[in-house]
Length: 117
Image (spheres, rainbow, N blue to C red):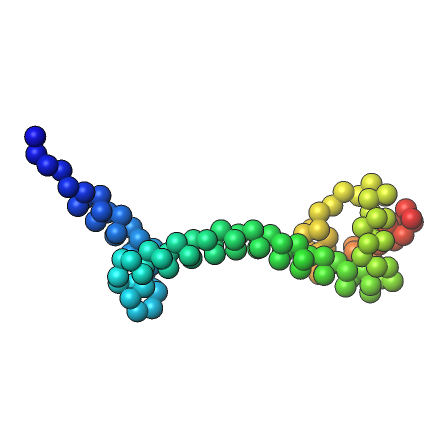
């Protein structure tokens, strides 16, 4: 039986890694060994970044809601507590969008929250 070497699979693996490393500077886009290290590290960063993105957006939404609530003479925690007690179940993304695009609507939500407290 003929001896089988792994050239085809190796070349395929190398091409896949080098394709992912396209655009990297210097040897990181040309040499397999350095490209493989760079790609593995960048995939780790991408995984972590997807988790951080969710945190960052939530932080932005809360900051926007807090700023709009302070303009209506209530702090963030009391506003959210008032909404919960009033039975208004709205996520922070939508609240921040309302705060930006419709200040009058947000003011009415603040009044409802204040009344529920």
